[in-house]
Image (cartoon, rainbow, N blue to C red; front, side, top):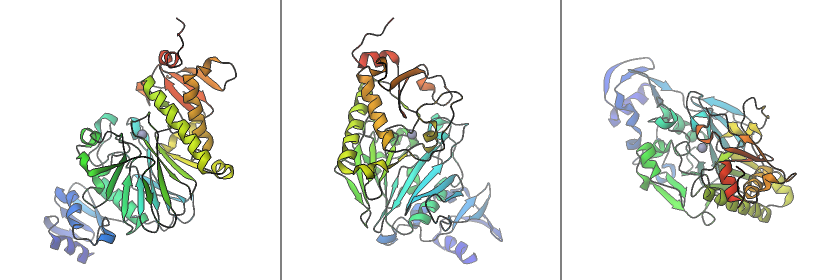
Length: 399
Ligand SMILES: [Zn+2]
């Protein structure tokens, strides 16, 4: 322990006020900024990993050793372990869900959001970056947490080891790019799909948008080694360049918010409804063309907000929940059928399977959707002002 502390001193990474007892040392508040300098001279194969695994929690004036994340209990798929703010679940061989269980005193993504880490033999890919707990995000009432960056870094390092790391977001919303700063200056490549508003990074988190590279969905893929190739697919609507990530070898789909997470997605304009209708239908065709029936029946769809999976289609007061941890091929089809069904006015056709079940009333979770029509097809749901649904279908709304 002493040697480790001495190392930090030698590197001049923080100035101490001296005096430490056992595991406690007193440090000044610039401790949190020590990381970027430390990896400057790392060798290229270990680029993003901190050379010294020891990380410290800081309290008001006292730093305590932070136990590094330990992945050894994640043996079989389904195993999970809690570490600080996150619950880490093994969902496949070297594939992990990093779940932020959320906090109901917040708003929006603060209610829970998920990241996914896929490790290959050559590199690791982190899909999405969750909520910003480094500086907080005021609009969602999310406050900064102490050691937020160190905590997530320790998780990813514990899971991916020294594999080179790339990070790709599903879209540039604050609950999906929030922890960008944790990896900034660590020689990690950040990716976002073409069409996404990179400037959002500046307005959301005061970060320089140029740290992200963009790719064309469908052209870009991530070869992680050992046949684990992550393909990219464009689904607009929720955002302008939303990316769905697909791994054929593992029959895994990571869809962010592009299809919703199981209780629907709200669209403010007819144009966005048309986009999601078109792109989700293309995704259906893509899956049919690239997976045999047997394969696609077994697709696992991991969404951006795992907790919503349980709602089985729509959010409503007193709604009972389903015990479910991921969505499936039916979900992809239901979203496409729902969006296209609205454009065809099918909620008005008896027996079509598309139902208009009433207006959104559960406003705590989703104030912006209040009063909009909930259109449900199976477990696919779209929430849209009723007037716009009529207009999108080319119909006159009855007065
Ligand atoms: Zn989200």
